[in-house]
Amino acid sequence: MKTMLRTGLCWLALSGTALAAGGEQTDPAKEAALRALAARDAPKEVSAQDFVAKEPAKSGYCANIADAAADARFAWQKEQLAAMERQVEERIKLLEEKRAEYEAWLKRRNEFLAKADESVVAVYAKMRPDAAALQLANMPDEAAAALLTKLNARTASAILSEMEAARAANLARAMSESGRKDATAPAPKKNQRS
Image (cartoon, rainbow, N blue to C red):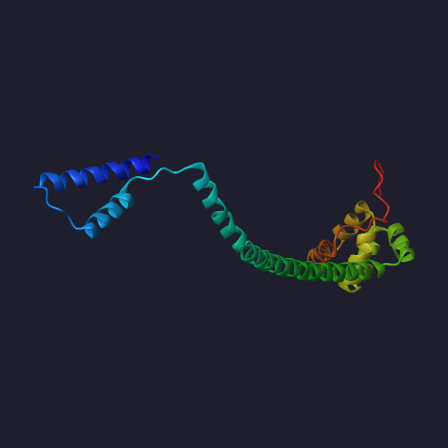
């Protein structure tokens, strides 16, 4: 309605300009072109129907690219999962290496402790420290350290104190490298004197 009113006002203005110019007749084609320009340049009102008509075009765009966006998101997620899988595989490999290393260490320790038979340990536990020290001085370091490891701490320290210092140091080093005292060895009793 307002657009028609504006167009009419433009027409009157053009007609009035032509009459003021001396009553000359203007070209009808020129007048039609001027009316078309006035209609084109006139501000247009946006109605609710115009807005609703344009909205489906926007959602249509989103609908058109939804598949491509989903494919791109899927490809990105697949790439991220592949990277995480590689990291997990590397960590599993490192853990397997550590497990093999610990198993080898445990095997060596058990072999070391097995060299000291319980009956032999019982014999050395009852010997005098000076006699035991002489006997252990002639044994290989590994066997002597295994025996000392199975003895209680008081008896082992008494035997080591009777040995030559260099030999005692080597045996103590071998004992510390083999790990702690075996859990099956008897704990030292309190208030017991040798």
